[in-house]
Image 1 (cartoon, one colour):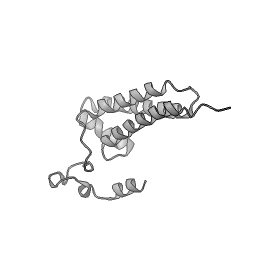
Image 2: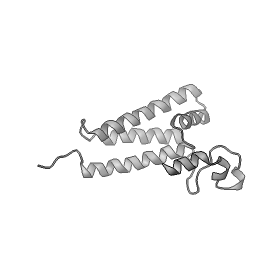
Image 3: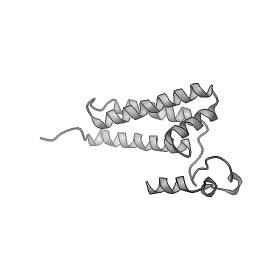
Image 4: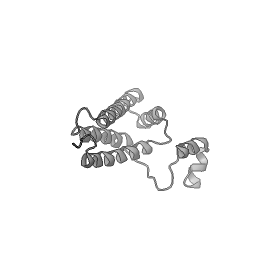
Length: 131
């Protein structure tokens, strides 16, 4: 949370990874690579999340929350594509604005981490009760 506050307060040019990107939109932190097909990747990750948690019990709160968030993300991507009339950069900008992130790559990273967590949840089975 503190990192998000600092990133939102710092001028974007100070977060830049090199001098050539000063003044460009949404520089990424050092080590984070730009995804050339970000919307496709993000949509596929959301679909994988929905698929992965479908094996969980329907009553599991984690499943309900992940499914809802992932389906909302898929719908947001579809809507952004429609409104931008196929212009990828505009659709990406719309997604970034909707989720209030500096770059869509942050959403991709978050979705990948959620997929890893879902795999761990499959092993842990927190919805099971011991008698």
